[in-house]
Image (cartoon, rainbow, N blue to C red; front, side):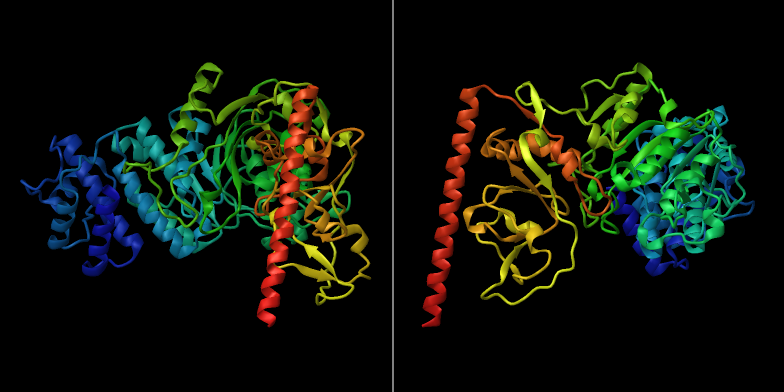
Length: 620
């Protein structure tokens, strides 16, 4: 309801008022909303605007600013009387100061999202994420906390900090003064800095500049080791790799056994932000690409992080969080700076780490709002994450009220061979029949995937070998099949044999199939993991059933890494615990699989014969 009214008000002002830019319109609406809050709180006019009474909004704004000093002396609302009257009509009946609804904050987020789309969607962080960051940080400037974001973008985290202050300090003037003192940001892009400051001014009423323009990797007016709270979403992506040797020289994470190495900015910003925190007390909520928390190639980043910081919480964000602007997966991590760096072998943390895997962010992959069925409420479980974390801090437990949250002792993070920190990897796994288990690798002859190769396709015909992609292995009649020459040097490595098990390892990860007789000798993409069974150790049909079961699929999903393209490794697949079952149950499972595979082979043959008959008929 409120969102619709604000958008109607924006459209009216854009078409009719003297202010034309989103930032300017947002600033004037902010003045109107501040005036409404003043009327309700200071003059007991509730609601401030209604259909049965009229208010001189301009005069009320003057009284508000004289009492609260939110704007420069002599300021006015830069709207004509007709436009002010229209604004009053649109807001009629709403109690703007109602503590159960943050109308001013909602209005600012609406405008900020529109500004972000104009300036570049990659700078926009959803308000569910920014609000959760404040809960994780337990940010409280009344206790001396400051809040810094050196990748401020459009100011989302600083706005969340401001909203958090207003919940702590209801008095508008006191909240504004506290925010101006404790919030600070910087960004390299002057256009989004302007958006950030406009957002803060429309919400705060202050005319001071809280976000500066500058290169945060190279410097800024921020002392290392001095800040208590950081909330940030650094730019990420290998396409914007930092290569300047003079800059790389400043960072531990740019040094390797080979000397200086180019690094993606998200890696350097992780180090830069952690160094800005006060040792032993500073804490940071940072949006971090999934790859850095889970991928084997980023293990060195996690080693450095664990040596310099204590991980306190990790929330894997829903896939849609940054869509439609980018499909990159990310997590929100809470980390504290250690008193002093440790060697990895010397880490002996014994605290519990909070993890969560929320399912809904409130919009779909196209950015459209998603609602709870049958209501006008946004579909999101982030409030449940906040409640679970709050209980964890107060009582040391999460409880069972929200099943997507859990805790893990910090010792497990360093004990795990890959040092994986993503929440999904550590999620509790339901044991299959609570049976004794053995690793899959010990029950088969081999688990592997070929190396990447340069493909040279040929026309189908005599001597050509079908080449199946990952999407083909679940099809009865593979479509879009390409062909390789019989003398291709990589062919032997790519061929599969009847009875082998296949698992897609990238993209649509975790699709499982067996190789039917019709595919024996065919080539299969290197993006597919091969499992060569050993019937003397375990029945191949039983292994296929385990991999395709809910248990097996959850295990494979747990091992996914990568921020843009999902991946799993043969090594991880080989660690799958395979249960040992009693003979009767094992026989029932293997019999069912054999029957299913026979039916599959019959269906494949029937479809192939039918297609040949169609082709022959058309040829006639």
